Amino acid sequence: MGGLARRVSYIKAFRHRSNGEVPALYLDAGNLFTDEKFINDQLPPEILAKNRWVVKGYSEFQHDAANIGFADLPYAAELLKKDGYEQRVSELSFIKKLTSANIHPADDSKIAPAPYLIREVMLKRGGTERKVRIGIIGLTEAGQILVAQKQNRYAGFTIEDPFQAVKNILPEVKSKADMIIVLAYMSEDQAKNLANGNPEINTIIVARQLSSTNEPQHYSNATITVANNQTKYVGELRYYFKGDGTIENQINRYVGMDPVIPDDPAALEIVTNAHNDFTNQQNNATQSNIQPTAMLGGSGNGLFVGAAKCASCHQEEHKIWENSGHARAMATLQKNGQQLNNACVGCHVVGFQRGGFQSLNTTPQLVNVQCEACHGPGKFHAEKPQKGYGFMATPQGCVQCHDKTNSPNFNFSTYWTKIKHGKAA
Image 1 (tube, rainbow, N blue to C red):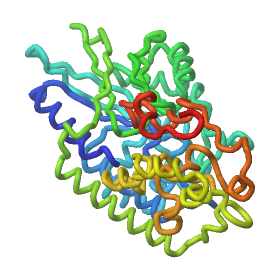
Image 2: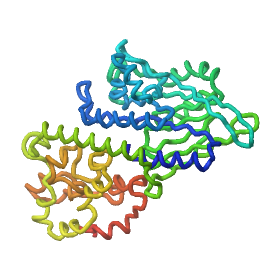
Image 3: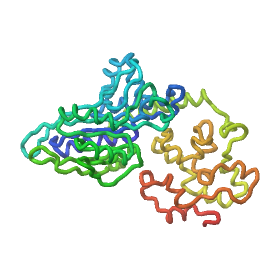
Image 4: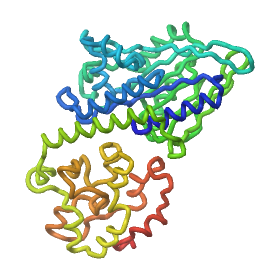
């Protein structure tokens, strides 16, 4: 939800600039919900709250369609339960805009998502109007978690082979649509195979890989473009039509949702309420499930000892660290209201989801990018110091967090001068 307020603002500005003459569809290629902590067929309250606000935000601002990826299924299963379905749809219209051609309920307790959706738009440029019917098909590959099972079941659903599913559905969609878009939660290589085997498809928007700012690729009759994996960018795919209504060209670009784009007030209110709700739910969960730090690394003491312990021997290195941005990494998240966003937290603390940082309440000693975030758990080195501990290849180790999406201005030679220490310095 982090970028919703700016996305809505950008979409409204686009409509205004085009004088309402250029129709636009707002699509999501998958992985819109989080399945973190999906254990024993249940999602915890704080994750349910986060996902609920995503659906509310997408409902309020009229997103047109979203593909269900396999990682979306734990929460999609909640939305698609037959019990109370009509009531949920009346409150959250976006539920009916979820699509998947290869996800099916394993039993009759759930509603099947629409295998495809048809959207009609009017082309108004040049003083003429032409209606274009757009078919939108959702597809997902199966997650690795499903491989060992007899049937591809996840959260009460089965996942059919996406290549067979699209073969089955394309004739029907083709009879109802002038052009076909596939939202594909799969690798780019799989999308290429999909395009080569199905010339009826005009566009494939791919999710489930690292962000890409590459130009669209053309395979068979389809253009393949990649959806960014974070909300820091909006992909904008523009279609240009010939006089007979056929597609002449497709041009893609990625628009950064930076502070130059103002927050839409109504959307910002939803984001703020979502953040407050999630924070309250997470705080409640933390207070009721406090885990002693000593148990984080398994039996005995935790594997991470914290920067204060490192400083007892490495005083000079500790001083360098204290004066660096690494020592204030969590404050950066808090400034932007992302301190509870697990997609961000891992690069701002020590050992997140690896037996280290759990929460600000339970493990405050492991907050920020401390020594062990780069050099690894220090328990055994602290107990018996010896050579061989802590080597990290640079800049390879740095770009795991300082990637193009999250740290676009990262330059190793410039950044390293701020924190250089040890033999490498």
